[in-house]
Length: 291
Image (tube, rainbow, N blue to C red; front, side, top):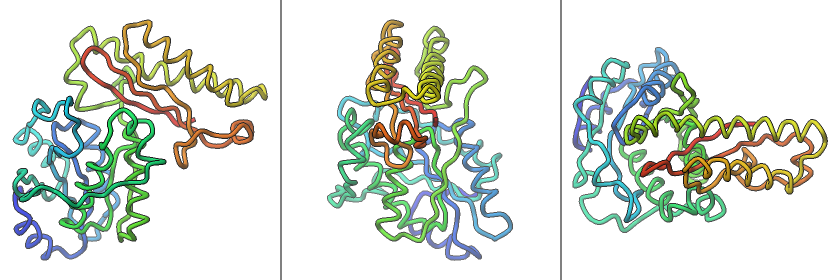
């Protein structure tokens, strides 16, 4: 695996490749979920000759003023070893002055109806930061496909829509959420949890599973409408908060656009997803479960 730190060197290297690359953007501090995305990219390219490229860049633009940009773990040497073992061909690891040699005045602002709900409501500007850096990385890497994890469900949808609307020749693939044996979704921020919090953290997936079961039961009984959903959501949030969590949301939404389903859609089998974000101690966790 080659480790490349500059845009010019990366472009020169990719110009020699027999086919356009597959791309997995990350912020580093890698875990098995990231490595599963690398494996998925490797499977997708097959024997086409497309190199698998991963990037590691902690993107200042997507962090709010009170978030953990300065303390976010930078573990480049360890991450490089993991990527090498996972079959990555090229690691692009630019520093901030390489990717942002001047203040990034041009930014990609996604539509408010998708970017200002859920995560966007609690992290203003987050998706502008994500879209801006991903579009810039796409312009640098020029991939034919890119893989993002479904744990960041809203992010995957925002980026997929960006690619569609910008007519980028890139296929966006979602990687299934990888979980620990006890069900906790793998996340770089799990490392912030102390042992007691780590044990408690499984309550998030337990809550999502409870919501899924309650929605399914109400739908089977012909009793699923917006009122029933609101009661299920409120009960789930309260249950987490009673255990010491500080919950931003537990919400049932349409899979296709993350908007609130109508009563007719709820009763007639519209594909749904339940999404949750809650703080445990100082660590904010997110997860989702398709219904």
